[in-house]
Length: 96
Image (cartoon, rainbow, N blue to C red; front, top):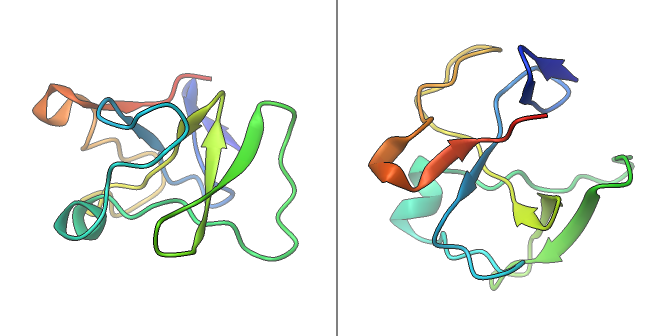
């Protein structure tokens, strides 16, 4: 599911990457993860060839795309919202 060239989840919610992530490891926990919830893997999810799963420090499984962990932004309320793009110069929507 893609909206306007942006990578989204199956409900059309925008997905983001975080510049402070190191390789395929997430650097977003605690308060960061409250504002930028990780895009977690759910049983039965099927994704394409550029998708993979990573194990977070808390044991949850998070989706990655093209090697980058993916997140939502808490202020995005409906499909197509991209309020987090460019936040702090380190959050970016994922271009398809």
